Every structure is written in C-alpha cells, then in structure tokens.
Image (cartoon, rainbow, N blue to C red; front, side):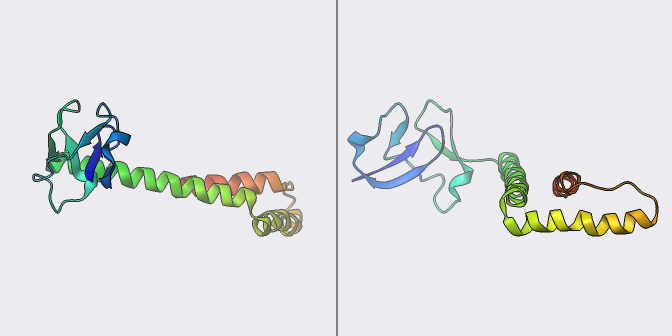
Length: 129
C-alpha cells in the first residue's frame, strides 16, 4: 500500500491502492520529509506540476490562516441565515414580534412593520456581525 497527495486540493490519503489514483492528479508516495509534523494546510506542492512538497513560508501561512478564518466566518453567517429561514420557531417569533412591536409603534404614530421586514433586518444584523 502507498500514500498519495492530491496536486490540486492537497488531500493526503494513506494506505491506498495506487492504480486507483491518476498520477496526473496525485503524487504517489510523496517525499514529506520537509513537512513532517506540520499541519497539512501548510503543505505546498512547489511548483504545482512537480512532486516536491515543501512547508509554506511564514507569509504564506498567514495568508492561509486568513483565508480559512474568512471562509469560516462567511460559512457561519450563511448557516445562521439559513437557520433563520428554515426553523419553525424562528419563523413563529418573526411573525409574533411585528405584532408586538406594532402595538408599541402605533402608540407613537409610527408605521407598522411586516414579518418580511423583520426577517430582512435579522439577516442584515447577521451580516453586520
């Protein structure tokens, strides 16, 4: 059995049957001596068409970490927004709150708010976080 490293994604798989992996896409039994003990996210195939695996430089590691943090934050916001859209409890609250707010708003001669407006405001608040 051999180990393989995907040239594009950096996916590392151990103990595989190498005929199942195209050498155009995978490095078979890569030399990982330069990255031993380091997180896979910092492994760089340099240049991409070669079989040389090196550790990302400090600057590259910072960029990788920033990209991961940004993607994680965006993903969490999208998940939160989707949950607002699909969870029955949240929908019930969104429908209930305008009625309660509108009672208070009417005391001050303010126009009513719709459930859709409250839902949009919740999503905007999630984006602003």
